[in-house]
Image 1 (cartoon, rainbow, N blue to C red):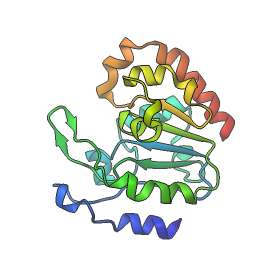
Image 2: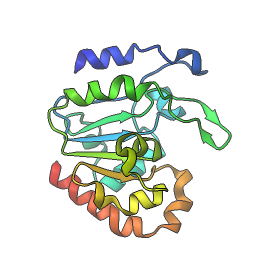
Image 3: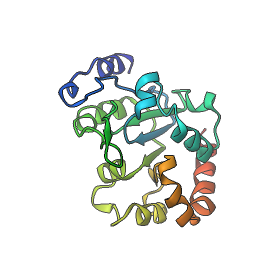
Amino acid sequence: MKNLIQEIKKCQLCLPHLEHGVNPVMSASKKSKIIIIGQAPGSVVHKTGIPWDDKSGERLRSWLGVTEEEFYNDELFALIPMGFCYPGKGKSGDLPPRPECAPLWHDRVLNEIEEKPLILLIGTYAQKYYLKGLIKKTLTATVQNYKEYLPQHLPLPHPSPRNNIWLKKNEWFEDTVIPELKRRVKEVL
């Protein structure tokens, strides 16, 4: 796994498409117990090189019911984005993750992880890639029907502050899905 991560960190494939340059951000271990497939690093994470080192990460750790120390222990959590580098800013938020990363790296990383008891799919990009034809018409419907994807996958909305309106409109998420998520995380850890 260490050699593979070093190879990922040296990747330059998307350099022509990234105005802020490459800085692949991810972490994993052969022993990772829970795999979190996110979207792509934001500008803060691009600068720090630490996955989920922003407001989204704070909310995600709260949803999981884990400490920072637990979250950043790669023997507990593999943190793998759909796009490993910051894609840049778009009109209404960050640009989509680069499409080259997941097909190039994901299988290789996942094949190195000894157990795959729970894969959290955060946001539409991860859900479309991993759930393929099983995904519902909307992210809301996919997350509402999370039980259909268990025990392997658990789809979640992105914990970004930009999703505060979605969270307000969908109070069932924090009442129903978050307790189930915390229970499963505690069980696995």
